[in-house]
Image: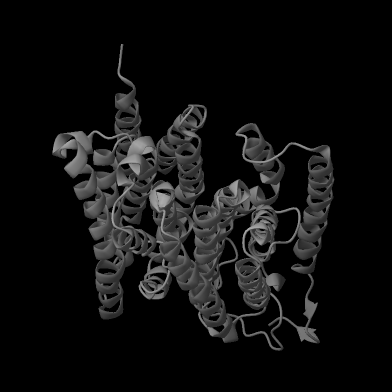
Length: 508
């Protein structure tokens, strides 16, 4: 009988072979290539479901499911994106390796695999950032190495050192991740803080946050989708693993202050950006910091609802942010620009990207019944529960969360002006009305609504939230109503895109 630890490697090798075969035949047999490459994330997704069903595998399986879901939609997207922007550059194999390496971080069962695949994912991430070999991308890649990679690696090596002292080096490598926090207990609180800050550097929480805007905005769109949608969750997942070992309230308060400052900073920066990808990049900083607030508050006040909020918010952010970065890539292919001041007319010439942006922005700002709404309402409910322990802390954290939500509404609506708001219409010289990327990004964005009720039921089954029809029925009804509204909006946009008269004139 095969030992359980072997299964992730079997899945990894099988997925790698499918990716490799798909890239080998890409030029001569593009359809076969796409089928082979899409089979890989499907295999990863199926294994993630198995992991979720294990007694100690729910949370790592949830993150793995997020990684494989994003990979499934990014895979066909990348093929079309490469054809338009980087013909002959073989971006697909790099994105495939990136998606697989991040996935393996989440399905790792022991410390050795976790550390090894974390390092590998970071290396592939660097190559993704510097894909366009220019001075600005190399600077962004160097900043990524120094500010994101090095602190996270120091944190991982510190974890390895602490566990090796108690178990020996071989024992530390074989340590199941589910038992990691047990062996981190009792360490110096300052060391706990160093580990947490180092891991959260990957999630771009202050003071190690400033690597992210350039990295996410300069990388190719599919790489940005994985970086923002999934890779930053490595930091969140790593922090979750060490949270039970953090006993010092001072360490928790420090993390809460850092995350709160980053929420406000990220939101304000997103509000003033002109590059649509930089808007999304700073938005990532804000959202990962809100997730960090949920986890740090859970560590400090032991309120289970905050853990649920962090998990749901992580899934929601992964889906809406990956689809938005994919959407920004489509905008760039169509218009050859990411400058917000030169856009504002796209609703007149395309329809599917409009719906992608609307659904994802609704989830970003927390409109019901999207996943973003579910994540934010759970976060606010959890922070309200902090009143039972500390009125001052609850008040301050709720103010930060409210400010973050308000800023998200502001810069979310600003992103929508990509499609509406121009007073003039200057037709681009090389206008591509069909890029092939639209279906992938639209399908992923639809999950913002389609998964809201299933995700809630899943956390109920896992015992992380109460099952009550007073919650289930309204979410189900709102989902059905939102589906009808999506159909109406798509029909309206598609019809208006065929009309010639617009903005008081006729399209040239």
